[in-house]
Image 1: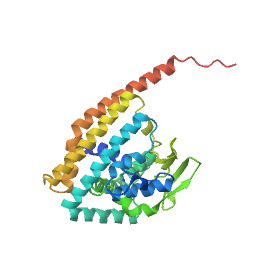
Image 2: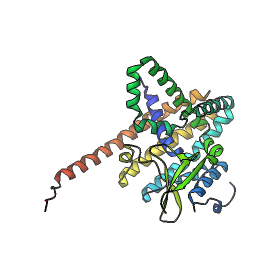
Image 3: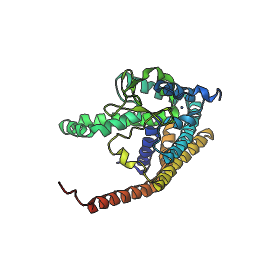
Image 4: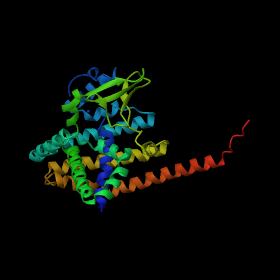
Length: 305
């Protein structure tokens, strides 16, 4: 049974995973987006310089409202980086242990990123899990416990070292041209998040951007489409950002005792405001669905000629 705090944590992580999987010093001329490979190098450079807040500018926006939301996402990503720095400073042994387990999982071929785990579930693994559970319930429960532990470790690693994979593994990321204006993102020469994939697109300004994986089933319907929906969606991002800022302050002021405590506090802090924001946004999406259904019903069928 999932606790309210656990549910809120998963919602928080899904949003942070979807936006984190996509980083003072030198001038902006070093931050090139002239080619898809330049975007990879720029993201790594932003992280190395402590400027993860600028990562939102590397994500493709369909319109001005989305660009404003992505600016706020960038602010959140910068605060997430500061939280990671505080966690690494105050809990170094726990962070080292998490990195060791993550490496072991990766070496054994298991998905270690939150986004990979979410995409695997979205691609239809639940049906296969149900069939395995029917054949061998005890084995399924054991595998379920392992998946939950792995998910928990991924959550803690998100807080402790959110961009470590980008700094350490940028050389394993490459791109493959698909058309003049699109390119696939590859990991060790293979598609990222198969079978869905991640792509880059050339914008109207000539720069290349990472396209959010909106092809995850059902995800596109969740995205805002109107100015009011964008406003409420932006408020959800602000809620998560406030939680990240509070967590970083609590770590530095030693009100959080370890990484397990950090994970619990994240759920507690996010639950009420995130739940209220989610309900408000869900109601707007339901109204949109009803209007679309009414319009479709009112439209007379085309008369065959």
